[in-house]
Length: 225
Image: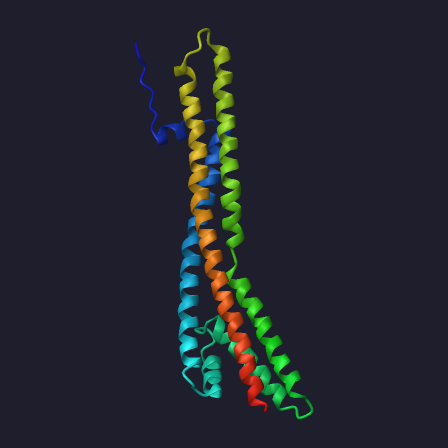
């Protein structure tokens, strides 16, 4: 009598050995966390770009700097990275300008340092959890490969207990082992794609922030003349 093997994904996962199940469970958790941060980071960067665009329009429209500063202070929770950098620089500029003994280069340099410190904090926030996506993309295939090697090893070890080895004896073990590799790739590929995309987007935002700091420093320097 011929016995029909169930080679569905769920059956292969359910019948896998304990170490392979552990690898699959680990990869499933990592994949879930990876997708969570992929969507979370997408919303974060979209919001950062929108707020940067909005503040740039307000800033370069020729409005009063004091009014922009008061608006940034009043809406700190809703402000973006660029607005917080402006707030830090203008606050330091106003404080140092009140000290009559300081020269113009010292005042501008102090404002630039304040903006640079805020810039570093903002970049740290934007880059948070990118390392997790990078680690997921680089490590997950090897974790899946470990599960595959373990499953194939068990499949061939089972041949020692049969007198006549056929493909039917090893096919289930090999199939369930390859599922571990498939899950590892499913976790790794989206993480790598998202990491590359988000790293590019963050670099572009960083260039815009740095350009603004230089241009704003020149504006502050002209105000001291």
